[in-house]
Length: 282
Image 1 (spheres, one colour):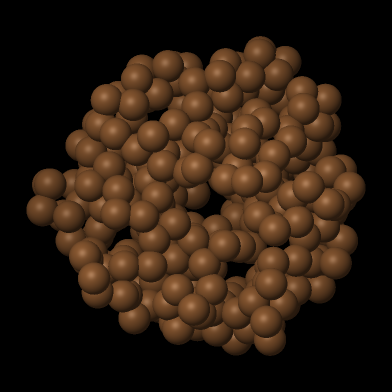
Image 2 (tube, rainbow, N blue to C red):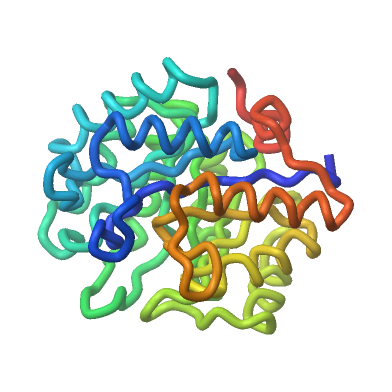
C-alpha cells in the first residue's frame, strides 16, 4: 500500500485554547463531532487528549479516564475510526503528576493505539520526563494489552532510545510506527533538512508520520508524504488554515492535506487501509 497515506487528526491537544481559535473543541460532544467531520474529510486516525469540558484545562492520568471513555463512546457511535489516546499528559501538568499515572487511561480504555514518548526533553519552560524505565514499562503494558504504540520522537536521540529500549527488547507485537515531531520548543527545529535526517535514522521495516508544528504543518507534512510517510494535522499542532486565516474545524486541515495527497498521485487511506498498514487487528 505504498501509494496510500494515513491522515491522523489531532483534534484538540492540551495547549491551544479557544483564545487561540474559538473552534477548539473542549466538550465530549465537540470532540466527537470534530472527529466525525475529520473522518468524513479523510482522516483514519484520531489522536485524543482529555480536557475539562468547561475550561479546556488538560486533564491527565486516572482523572482523565472517564473523559476518554466518553470520547471513545461518542466517537464510535458516529464512525469506526481508529482512536489513539495520549500518554504524554497535559502540557500544563507534566511536572506535577505521578508519571506512571499517565498510562492509566490506556489500561482502562484499551484503545487501538496510544502515543509513547521515547525520551525526555525541555518542553517549552517545562521538563517532559520520560526516563528509560518508564518507557519500557509503558511499552510492555501496551504489548500485553495488544495496543499499538506510536513512538513519538522529538530528536535523533529519541529514535535511538526507541531502538534500544523497545525494538531490540521485542516489546512490540507488530512493526514500529514512529511520529517524527518537528518544531516544538525544545525539540528539533522544523526544517526540511532535519526531517530528512530523522527519516534516514529510522529502522527498516517501520511506518512513520510527520508532525510539524504551526506554519510548518502542511509544508513538512507534504514533504513527508513525498518521502513515503504519513501525516498528522489538526488543532493540537496548528490552528490556521493558511497565513492569517483560522481554520473553522479540524476537517478543513484534513481536507487540505487530503487534496495535496491526491495531487501528488497518491491515495488517502481509509480506516480499513490504515488498520492494514499499521498491522492493527479489528
